[in-house]
Length: 456
Image (cartoon, rainbow, N blue to C red; front, top):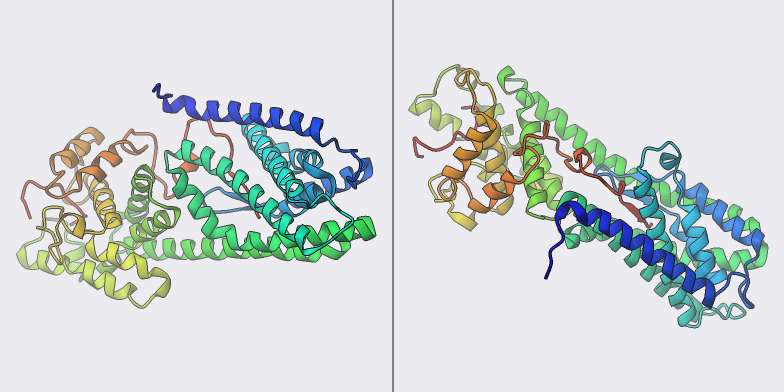
């Protein structure tokens, strides 16, 4: 089997989706013309649903990692229910235009990919609705609602798979990890939008454009709910970052250490294709991994030279102290093991519990490599000449199997940081210099020779 080089997969995906979307639209136009008998769609109706979709698509919610969430699925599905697959395709393709596209903040091929993805999802949704008998508009029965639910499910599956595929290729992550994270985050909210679309179509058949008045509030509140969740998560992460900065501020030589560790850890996690929720845990753990140093006396923490035995023993207590500090924070419950075990060694000679190999949580093993690399390449009072990038990578590989998990080390070598492509960030995807389709569109709705592992 011929394997397509990674740098060519995204353009190939874009081209494939565009061609398939064009073919699907032509077939739909032949089989279900917009003005066909029984389809309650005329030019005015088509324009109405397109304008409504444009309005709700103009104000999407952008999540911290670049996903775009919109409630435009409701008017698109309503147009599919009333006018069939072709009407939905037209409404979906034109209606998902965003202000960011008009401002040219998204490359043209990304815009084309997003619009063609929505067109495909709309056609499939319309076909499912018609196939299940939902085209008998004279009978607004529970059967038509079930048909609408099935059509909505098809729309979400197609749109999500295509969005997740582009993100997975751009970030080198697993398709299941990307899609799974989206389903957990937005899947439940989506359920409420499908019956709403059915009701919008029903109301339009009775009162036409007044449907906007009837359903403006539900659409607005759904969008506001998305925004509130995103803002709460963003506020929480900003609070975590502020606390991490306060911790680092105790020692001027470690300024932004926690932020850099968090960014490297997330890059490694993405390379290892962990889930979206695990990337978030890695980010928070990186920011909080040294919180236990709050309890370390300044005489030890700020000592410019190497620590003696007693001082080292005291310093080595900081992972446990950090875990104790975070233990009562329910939202950070999953971060505690990473903070506690990020100084465990792969061969069992680390601290505090001398765990061996896979007894150490994978995310903690990732955090260990990130922390060690940052420490090796940063200037410290006791380290006036830090290691170069190549020297640090060589040291990580030399200690793979003793201090570090070999798989994690090799994953790190593939990251942007290891390739010297700029300063790290806890959200690596937006920094990629490679061509991108656009932000994804989710319409939903102790060894003396070991590498150093910290500043002391």
